[in-house]
Amino acid sequence: GENVEQHPSTLSVQEGDSAVIKCTYSDSASNYFPWYKQELGKRPQLIIDIRSNVGEKKDQRIAVTLNKTAKHFSLHITETQPEDSAVYFCAASIPAAGNKLTFGGGTRVLVKP
Amino acid sequence: DTAVSQTPKYLVTQMGNDKSIKCEQNLGHDTMYWYKQDSKKFLKIMFSYNNKELIINETVPNRFSPKSPDKAHLNLHINSLELGDSAVYFCASSQDLLRGGPAFFGQGTRLTVV
Image (tube, rainbow over all chains, first blue to last red; front, top):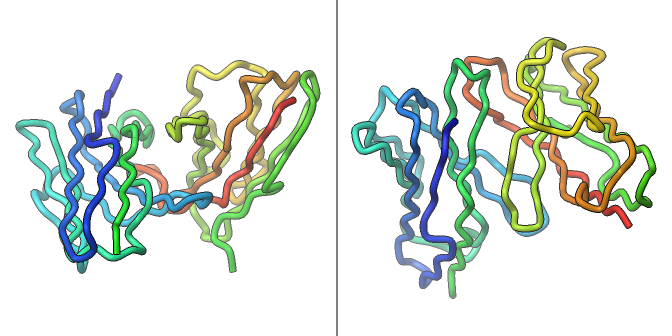
């Protein structure tokens, strides 16, 4: 089955700096790659996603890049703010597996004011 | 209006008991899911339903039984609760199977088995 590795597990950045989280996946059949943000004690929230026919997608301060050949994708947060502090999860799914998302282990991001 | 709502938010119960968690979505989505988040925050799919039909049934003990009376509801019943069942359980939904994964999660149910 699919295996998703996420790095780093924790990331501390100064407010205003950029944060980058990287994920690799194992199954080349995966074609949907969402990112979720989970604040402490709250539900995961879908913040951005990308499909395999696209190499990059941007939404304001958040961008995701995908390298299908290398089977890795990354989340970039620019101009970080304290409210960006949360745990971020990457995931990958194979459509033939019925939307079965496999999650990475999560990255705890702390933005220091 | 809450898109995906689940009840209860907290559930504390003794080993051996049977309990249910209810989930409802008002988005008109076809697909609903149950996820388990363990103490290390790892998220894992348990079940998914599409238009009341079971699509994914992960390697979950058969003490866990999902039920979807209609496409807006997906409930989770757990028999003979064990200490290891303690976790946060999230319900989620997506428009359909083409979406690729859940778009909205419920607020979670923190289950503590004592």
